[in-house]
Length: 393
Image 1 (cartoon, helix red, strand yellow):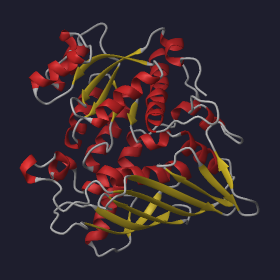
Image 2 (tube, rainbow, N blue to C red):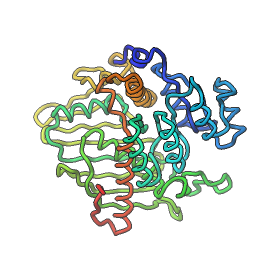
Image 3 (cartoon, rainbow, N blue to C red):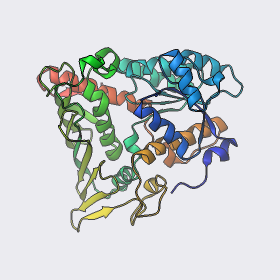
Image 4 (cartoon, rainbow, N blue to C red):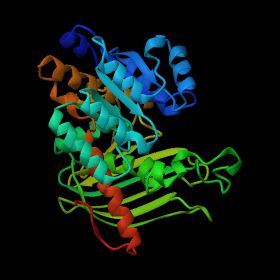
């Protein structure tokens, strides 16, 4: 359970945070800012919230940011904060996918630590470039695959690492949404959203939007890497030009087998991210829409429900919850865990101290590049008629 504030212990103050993107009308922008506030490890000091300079400045002022730090655009923010003695320590990026590389590269080059919304970039080459810059600078790069912040997802990871499932043999992961099930989505009269533009949203809408989440979740819990895929990607809704469905068989680096499917066109479904992991000693199941329960079914015993801070909670999960057993917490708290762990790593780097190793499980630039490599492999396999395709190079 979270207690003291390691950032203030190490630095004597909160981290100064600036945000790029996530302005008026952005769901994910508010989630980022709320996550940063929850554990008092950041102070929001600057923002460039919109690609429209007037809207950007006005939105920053409405958030309580001083007029001199409510910037008209990202370039002005980076230049302005780099020039200040009390400038931002960390830049958080939540803009359309095609700008992630540009802003993250510029941020790293100026010496800021980075928090970036997923996917890390639209292309593998761009992602590998960011990995190189992070390695060269030694700065912290946090990628907000926020589902890895749920306490019971971390409990599942810890149970696998502890050997409670034995050798992993099977992994089944799916992420099913219904928000794009309508044949009139998007409405041309309202303009085409940036996610539907392959240049801005990436080569596969469904893979960039939710496929990377499902893949990252499987890697996070199991500690395994996907080595080969046999996949199909396309559109379920007739006439749609972007991908709204993907399915794949998976081969993992330890010989395990798996299945993966994602869609945003399942009418009536909300946000059904699910995973089942089976080993030689038992299986785990977790559903994001019922995030307070983790099912463990051992090979030679009765089924067990694990709950946050309940019996059997392991240290990685215990540090990821703010409650006593029996109280609900979910999406926002998971997002905040990613921010809080990144804050501890950033503060440790800046103070020359060592962070708690349990704080270093947040996704990073390498995870982002591995996710983009998986996306490319899925697309390539589908174009080759579902042929088994290398997902490691």
